[in-house]
Length: 383
Length: 199
Image (tube, rainbow over the protein chains, first blue to last red):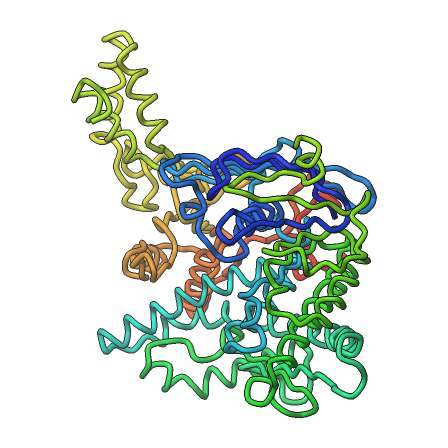
């Protein structure tokens, strides 16, 4: 997947930005606060219908304006082109998404169609943060590869909120809610089982990719390991039926506790994935360097996984990450971006690019300044 | 105040209370009313009041009606042994359009949703049970939406109704008729696979 061009209106500090991108590396150069990340965020709106930071539509809208628009032309690996547009109206609080000028009914239909991999300073939380950060990583990747998973996830969250309300109400009013809980239990187990099953399969497929890319960055001796620790599980098997039975018995076991706390204590919303290097927990034992290597390995694995599943090279968004990487890792990552397809790299200094880096045809440099984006070649000519 | 006339402002405010009408649309509607003939406006206002004055709920099925019981419940040709349970009056309209269902309805008035404060006592479930104890119902068809709230209501009702020893069924989920398999979305397709039947 490639983005050929983008048109951004009233989005963060980009009042009116138009840019034509190259097929390879697109370097976005500029000082802090000039709008580099904002442009990446606009790209994320085209591919995922929303910000990868989780910023709300009202927040990314330019201050004092009522409507932002992002549109552009995307091209699949097979050469099929899509005109994609997203527009948000603040007064009506409506967001519309168009593919080839046809309005998309459900945003979840878009997710995964234009796969992206994002590596930003926030991504560090995958290895350093809590279980919720790793679940978010799982969900982000699996949702882009499977629409069924995304639908199950959205429904699961809805069921969870409903069920928590029943538990909370019964705690407050001190009444027995067993009858009221029952329909929600059934739906929780139904969606939850499919989610756990899918996460098992995903991690199994991702592990060899992580091992491989870790070795290619760090060399041979360190072995990274991901272990899925679901909140509910089939005792000996990861079949859907076994997970479902495990889920049901765990719900029964925790029923008293759930009533006391007034909240759902069982299900994939409490899953954990532990990360280890040479059998030592990453959160407690890994060095800064190991954290970074593992993070990049995970992101490369994510890239390869999505490419496999969708038969489409994802677009790579690298937000200001070279400040955090040493020269060696930066070089490895750059070598990779050179071979992967289209990538967008925001950085304050172009010294991260080796002097021999080829800025010919496939790669372009852009200068981002006060919400404007200019192809550097054109700028030099204009001067 | 955006308009120079307070009455327009008020009308626009009223319109924006309606579902699916945002502020801009409300403004447009209000300005349209200004341009309408006086008679037209009066008949619009009368129609609004009439709806409120004349329409009520059928005491049998809770559908909206002007006559009580409603034309469906009072129709002697309809099969009173089959009751189709739906969420809203619009669902009755949808099913009636098929011309295939000869039974009668029961309108719940929504679906279970604790987040919106809707529990079993807020739906017309008591009325349904009352109705079942009085008459000779042989089959209940649960035709609720396939979102999580509709599902939960279906599960809740099936648990409640099954011990009453009658046939309880639910409508099938799956592919829309007349569409190509390749155009079906993945979630629908996987549900359709789940609910496959032997041929």
